Length: 527
Image (cartoon, rainbow, N blue to C red):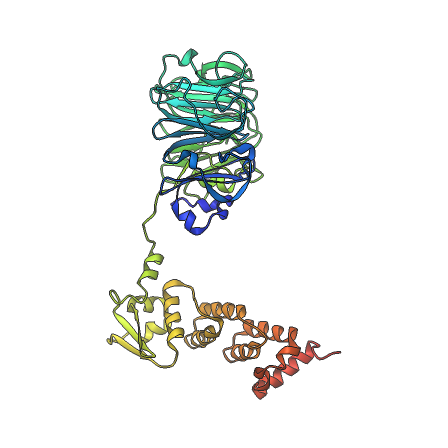
């Protein structure tokens, strides 16, 4: 299951809110904006709200999730964002909504006014079902179900594909070489546009100063042009970085071209390439490529599940595909892209599968599955012999030939012994600092060193002037040296009050003698 918590902005959401997330997009120049949908098909936003890009009707930032009521009842099919930022969203019904930055008409509503709320774009799209959207820095593309591409917005380099460099205020169909083609995939770089057609050909237009169009030149292209160098190669997908391009072929190979100052082409150097160049990842077939117009980072996933990254990775230039420990290309952008945005709309599937550890936690003290019960202070604790023998050396020997299904325990209290048994199932303890002293006794008796450390940590959290001497005494008794030193230092730092407590007055003679001697050595009684 995808861990959305890898994007820092999700730390603003509560654990309960995160459990409801089903789709998400992190965007913005500093990855400080977030839009997500819930299991209830509600849409929430939060963040700095630059240019009103949260669609809430204002430009106020929000540190808490706010529901986007204007899209109530709408289900998101796809979403993209620009640098302003502006948002282009398509619903499962094929409708298009835009909002946010609009200085270059990138919202497609015929104006250059910022869009503070989602606006339904219907001009030239009223009878069309949009199935994919893509945004450059300040221009927008959509793909319809019948394979047509419409574009609008900033057009200084021909990225709208209209044949001119005038900005396009409303959706306009991209024609020329695409007139009779069926497009199956679209993508945008900062100021360029790409389309893959059903025959596997790639058409490109817009800015080409870094060779990102793959035409062997650096001249801008105001109308779609086929990438001739890919003749005979059938492309399935295209992905655009800020100024570089990746394509994935039907044979699972990757080609790259364009800017390469960070090694984002994966060629082993930093030289720009104006022609498609093979990217050698590994012998395994590539099934997914990833890039984003706001970053110089590239990623790919193999059929075997390996995820590679290259380009700008947290300030480093990685010039060859680097094998990561990730299971998703999304993780690459969460952890290594600058900014840490999402390169696509995240899909978070509900995960009802329990890990082995989670399953074991659920079975603790379950009378329905247990084959052994401990009787402590007149109460039963239900456990499983095999787990106790696996997890604890003491039980491995004591239960070896024990056929009983009830074991009476009188040496320790019910809360302490229950906490011990629960620890064997969960690797954690939940006791008050006072009760943790009893568990420390048990951990010492059973030689459970990790449990002993956990007890000491819990006890430290509960120390005060009234109980400091009692805790020091326990630490000495159970040979918990770290805790002993901690309690001693606490007593020295609060010496005047501690020496007036009943615990100090009732202190064991030998312990008192050692305490005074040690306190003297550290200068506690100096005026």
